[in-house]
Image 1 (spheres, protein in one colour):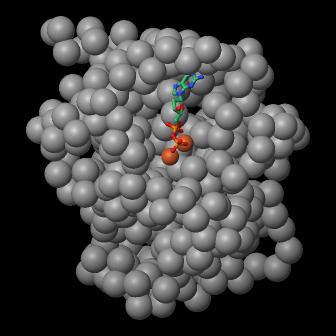
Image 2 (cartoon, protein in one colour):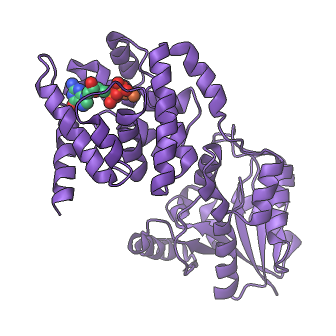
Length: 393
Ligand code: DGI
Ligand code: FE
Ligand code: FE
């Protein structure tokens, strides 16, 4: 009798987290083998980013090649019709009547399992192994496990491991933005395969530049390129991802060509939340709407980039490094006209980023107070107070 772990998923792509999960399950439950079982294109999920079965299989094979107790199972890929776990389990039991099966799942599945087809039968026929979520929800998960065990006589084990921070989805988003961090989450051979077969192609910044050149005024386009390059320089200085910074810089003002009424209309139409201050001064919306366009029109799905675009005008308390970089690059890029205090900020930004952010906010508030019809957005003021306090400490 063999104890077989089944690790299902789309494996789009397979990553180190999967391998750790499989390895820990193997060790902690004394399994004989773990089978990586890629699922068919699930009908409920967005499939536009799902690579072919051949590629997904090839990537799994590359990552398990050195481990003799890891196998690839094509059972779900080969079966016709909708794939239900219960059908897989019945087929497994039929083909391997002597063996015991352990389904390896993410802890979030604990909350969905009951709605799976013939859940009760699944619990009877297989053990469930759960990998922890990030951020950890172990206490909740423990309660849910107790509930399921009582209700179904289910046998559920938790795999002890550091919760995985990454998912295939977040790795795809990284690859799409050309983010170097993705390399660390993938087996080397998988990374090479992805590269060689151009599976998750990075967004082409040159194509975006050409698009923007046609939509923005020449001076705004020049500014945009200035922010793209300045953001990349600041990323070099502060150890942020250069490609992400350049992409966020390139797209930060992509909604700036719209007149006020259209900014409002477009934001409303697309269901973006609009504050009172934004309703009175719709130009403030170009960050939020820009982030929306970045996602919808330019295919950016990396949240850190979208947030940097959203907050580039007002800032927000506790900005991420990338958000600070875009906020400041917007202010200092070379084609900005000289204004009082700018050359000092340009010098300082390469020495102390927080201080430069603070001075920028201080300058902006002073400037706005001198304008007749300008209302200060609460975010701008709160961000100012946040950085003032941060520097005082
Ligand atoms: O889009 P850009 O011109 O490149 O730069 P931006 O998005 O930072 O917008 C700059 C303008 O935004 C600048 O004139 C100052 C203004 N601004 C920043 N915070 C506030 C603000 N305007 C108002 N009314 N209220 C604010 O809180
Ligand atoms: Fe802007
Ligand atoms: Fe700008």
